[in-house]
Image 1 (spheres, helix red, strand yellow):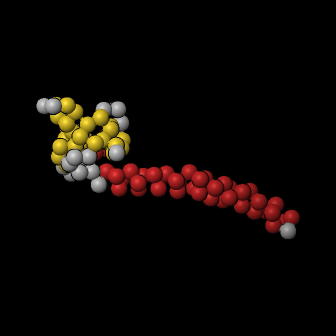
Image 2: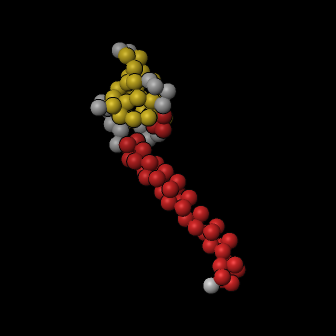
Image 3: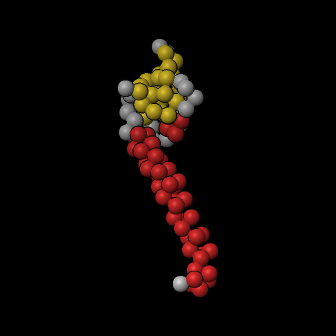
Length: 89
């Protein structure tokens, strides 16, 4: 047993660390990205949003990669969907 561990111990430890990193770093990040993409795909006119820059507004229209946001009366801004941080309730 000691001979096997001496021969493959380092390899086993490296493989174990790779698995640990994958489980604790990659998987949660994938879930977060999937949730963000679902939120972006579900954007619709009338949603109140906040951008990554902290600007709050109401979506006037949704295009493929952009949304038009009404910031105030008569003030509209076109932003990328990826700049939307979240939907406010």
